[in-house]
Length: 336
Image (cartoon, rainbow, N blue to C red):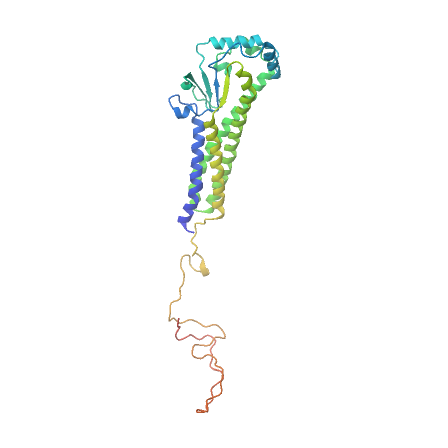
């Protein structure tokens, strides 16, 4: 297979790598521009506080039991109602908040249609802090929260930081994979190096996707039921998770085809080094040419014949063999 076949072999993983990079870019662009409807539909989680209520559907005892399950014993149900009441009366509180990789967006809900009005400034290692976003830093309830709750927030901050770093590394390595992929057209060594980058890209893309999926799924499953009683609903962004897992799928497929290009699809000509001769030169035998004969071969016309009884009409003798054989004679004429 020549260079054309080599290019065709590299084309498939190259396209898959570009597709994976596009999906990673879409994940990074989510919740970064309020005027883009496409980017506004890319978020990890949406927090809907349009119907927030300080009363809630739980009794005081149920609220205190729920708080106790999360290790919050110094906060009463009345404290929770007071904080939610402040949020309910706050005119600056948006109807919903969407969490992305670099920041968050907020907006209004009219006739069951969301309208993003503002997005925060992109920030590296971002994590959504409701106390800071909702202006509750000076609230007494934050100071009364036990150390267990603060540990949970620190874990969330640490995991969000790792998730951000994993996406950045996945993006960088995928870009390097595309650049190094040019050299894969020339040789299998180029494919080998590209395969290493493809493996790193797949590992970090998968790690980032798993982290984001597990992180926000836990939040939704553990807090969704409790907050729903107070009119606060949590929902996951299907488009964002579809983009990140498509990036994983494309990255895996690219890794498989890059590995295949290391073992197959050589760029060398199949006619090279034949019969230890110059590459690309093949000797062909033309008709009616002189050729050396091997040992024991007899020239044409002087082959050994089997003697038969002479005809009665002639009575002559025919020789049994030809004794004038030469070990390295040339055939006078070569007939096809």
